[in-house]
Length: 53
Image 1: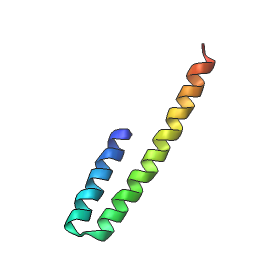
Image 2: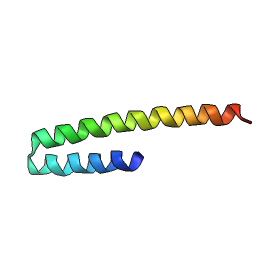
Image 3: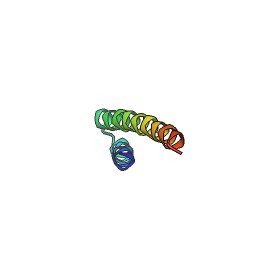
């Protein structure tokens, strides 16, 4: 999932450089959502891994 976030961030940067505002905003918002989902899943896995020990 982190790989998809990086792909959408790069897509947003490239689209922003070339002036495609709508595409850049869309890709940036998708990247932001995926990053927060990844972050939540990471914290959950840390907590669940700690309790199994």
